[in-house]
Amino acid sequence: MQLLVNPSPEKCKKNLARPVHKTKQINKIVKPILKKVEKSGDKALKKFAQEYDHVQLDTLLVTEQEITAAKELVSKELKAAIAVAKSNVERFHAAQATPDLVEEVMPGVVCRRKSVPIQRVGLYIPGGTAPLFSTVLMLGIPAQLAGCQEIVLCTPPNREGKIHPAILFTADLIGISKIVKVGGAQAIAALTFGTESVPQVDKIFGPGNQYVTAAKQLVTKYGVAIDMPAGPSEVLVYADESAVPAFVAADLLSQAEHGIDSQVVLVTPSEKFAKKVLKEINEQLETLPRKDIAYKALSNSTAVVMEDQEKAISLINQYAPEHLIIAVENEDEVVDKIVNAGSVFIGNYTPESAGDYASGTNHTLPTYGYARNYSGVSLDSFVKKITYQKISPEGLKTLGPIVEVMAENELLHAHKNAVTIRLNYLKGKKK
Ligand SMILES: NC(=O)c1ccc[n+]([C@@H]2O[C@H](COP(=O)([O-])OP(=O)(O)OC[C@H]3O[C@@H](n4cnc5c(N)ncnc54)[C@H](O)[C@@H]3O)[C@@H](O)[C@H]2O)c1
Ligand SMILES: N[C@H](CO)Cc1c[nH]c[nH+]1
Ligand SMILES: [Zn+2]
Image 1 (cartoon, rainbow, N blue to C red):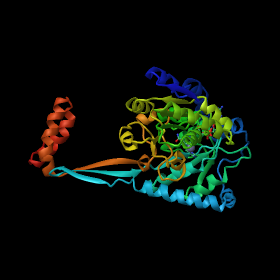
Image 2 (cartoon, rainbow, N blue to C red):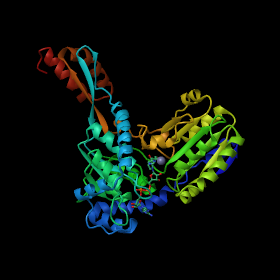
Image 3 (tube, protein in one colour):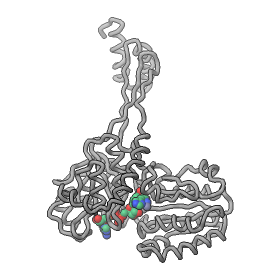
């Protein structure tokens, strides 16, 4: 991890550039995958399973027997933990429901708006380097709460052609039964075009590596929607001397262990504090089973000493981190000034991993700085809002002339006539 002391904005920009913006190279790999799946369906999915997941699959769909067997393999302790996480995620997402609204904007002109579930949704659960069964909760719970009619879950198989038991257990717990053994860009292609085993969906959700994220961005041109670009995990910690260096180091390492293309950032007003955190990182790193992955991610990562708080906040907002931890004395003041972040963790006792698993907020969040213009997954992501209007004859008498004038001035006479013909009818005229 590099240390920068009071760097210029240009230096910051250069050092904090995300490591995986090799869009062209990734797209070169992903585009042919999309084409082959569109053309050959399941046959292509099996071929890619062999090539990228190193497994020969006869069937792609998970069977009921596999789900029953998986449930036996999950420990009581894990089942109990998942139950608490499920309850918190359910509570926070159920509370997000927005009431339908009705407004009579002028006498006789009534407008309504109603949330309607997106009918067919595809959930991508990463499984390449770690079996992220927590993502099943984060996507499946809001999909069920929203009332989506068809939910398809895709996740890569291991080398024995199996899905991790905790993924199957969690999917079953929240009532998802259509589970397909397919990962990577090919999973995104299958959900977009549909294959013999994978139904075509209206919207694709979920995080993934750079191939998955690139595929999600590419398929939007085929009419399918996506939640957001949710790529390699990242965290920015803003901490001063009131924070505990060991806690900060642990938080940085928690996201560094996700993947070699993850990035973690420390921003602090104190060089002394930064050095303490770096020392802690080196010590804690040695204890981690995934230390090789974390080590590589740390080489993409920077500690920035920024004495001026306004400049530090401006840097954070420019970087727009997926996760932001704020552990400074005047935390409320700083929190109020944050305008770009996926999810914010406040105070010394709020580790980012609490949000990853069980606090109730969603862990599917925008990376690469997309927190500037995207929100993380929420109940809203699984609904669309339809608007309605009903106008009474009295309402049309008031509103109609307004529309007529506007239509005429846009030179759209047929638009105007759709009103005039009705107003004349109401006046008892034929035309
Ligand atoms: N932003 C978020 O909300 C969020 C949440 C959880 C996880 N994540 C991120 O998700 C990612 C998960 O990545 P992962 O790799 O563990 O799992 P993954 O399931 O996303 O990817 C595994 C698949 O990638 C494909 N693949 C592997 N190498 C390939 C290659 N050379 N060419 C083409 N395809 C290839 C394979 O088909 C494999 O099945 C991590 O980067 C993690 O940080 C992000
Ligand atoms: N930190 C990830 C989101 O970027 C989510 C996750 C799942 N499991 C552990 N962490
Ligand atoms: Zn995580």
